Length: 317
Image (cartoon, rainbow, N blue to C red; front, side, top):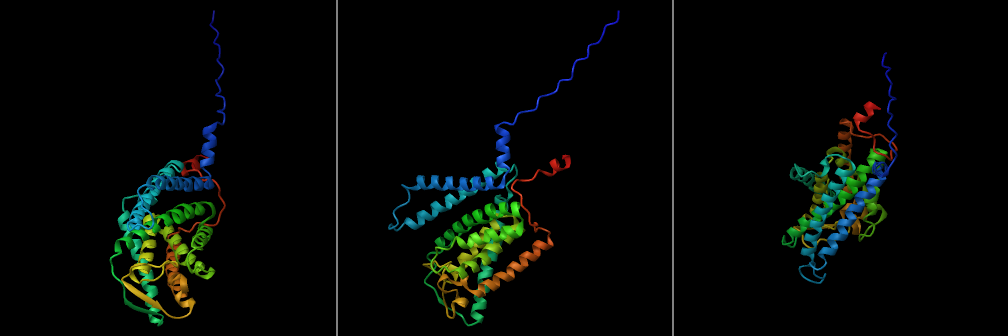
């Protein structure tokens, strides 16, 4: 008698229900959600460091207030960069090279040279036009603060406007729209500064907002754009003794007197509101745009709310 074989039915796995993890993965793949997460992480660092440092920072009238507050702000900025790097590595599952420590010093010095070079070029042009006159400054006793304060401001603003805002906008809308929006917001961020006018803020948005966005496209480095920002502010305020976005510098190596129309001098806003500085920056912007085009780094206009799949997933799809 032959034994009859009994075929066992194939076991079909039930589809996995969409759970909390899938929903979280979908949400974190959205660029606007990532933008909110990055900015939220920075805000948490600010709130935490301010609360912790309250008993350590003396009153504004105390002689040591500015020095201690600047050190606090420097440590706060370092913590914000670390927070961004941690969140980005988790949300985007990648090595966060834009804030990598390796090669940071060289990148920072490169940016510093670019920022100083732009301001020196602008002042050479202003002098050649008979607009600028120079005389000896007060002293160099404030050089430490003149280095620290622009360094803190440069790193913080570049982390927010270029590394976070511009980078995400570029993923969502392409390079041109990202440059336009991030540069405009950068200019508007200085609306409360002394001497700010619509024209001065427009000039600043182009001079630094557009230029530094293009530099970031070329380098993908926080340190280059932060160094350039610091060099710009340091040369303006401490080397030439001019107002930096309307803010006066207490110490400077030189004192510069600008004579002429507000269009040439920048008026109360300082040389950043001068058409001469704008023209110098436009030359640098043209060079940066040419390099981007040559290296095929310009991303076309698009509208993508969600981060695309990895190349491996695209091949399998």
